[in-house]
Image 1 (tube, rainbow, N blue to C red):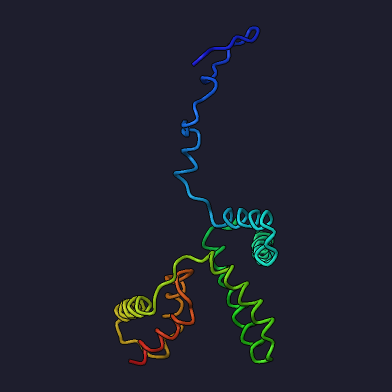
Image 2: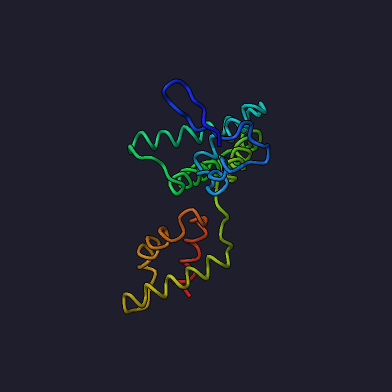
Length: 186
């Protein structure tokens, strides 16, 4: 380390120039992964550079939904909240695809399917149907033990409430609901 004298002040400087293999300054970035919100912003920049208008449009819709949520609730979004927003947008796309298919509008259904594919890249790995069934079975057994009785179809709301907390962002809630109905019926 050298000491540079500038008038009455001495300033310690690092060796100049640093050798090219010195990446200690960037070690912080290697240790910490990027948040989902930051990843979406970076993907938007990449889509702009690549002039990928379809992907860019979908990412802009996602960022608009995220900003709307932040403004409405006056909160800073964490990854779980971003995943919930992505889930909501994907559900909207599924509903639109179904409606466009019924109306024989294949062009619009294909556009929605392409948007859904872009959005699905931001979801964490989903649980398989077998994993959902096993976790629902454990959840139902736990709630039955807690209540001290066997659960029936009337307890569907209690089980779904607990399932939403457990499976948020990890599974399609339609599949979870079907697994709960099957577990309560059998």
